[in-house]
Length: 159
Image (cartoon, rainbow, N blue to C red; front, side, top):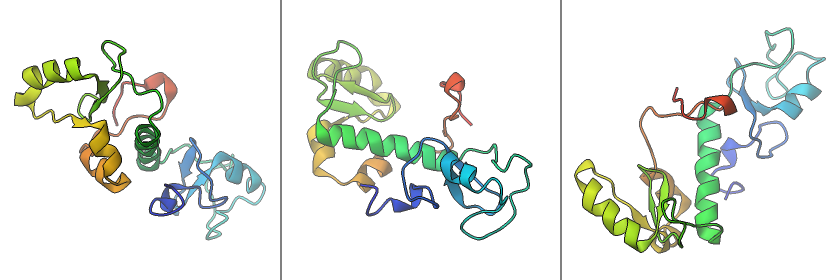
């Protein structure tokens, strides 16, 4: 997935996926490894702009890229069929609700649709997600203004 359409969410230094991407003042995104290598130089390895912090490592995470990576990993999990269990009853997950961010078995899906259809919850079958593209999945899971904080101790907090 990342090698084609989503290469832009990789570290701009090593071109690898990283959970700790940092956003520099020059707007390049680098992983901690690449930043540590360039720490003595104190410059962005891409454009050579000075990194203003004494530590050489910015404290601003690239939340957009981190959230895209998480959603693409979820898409890959669905495509691979790995650990797709209903979040409620732990049976085989046949549906995905992007609003609830949960897998649902057929029985729980029916209850979900009955009780949440007025709130525009549109769970989609795992089979339909697999038939679509990663871009389709991202479009269907897009939430406006709900970027989650990347700090592990702030799991439920949005930015």
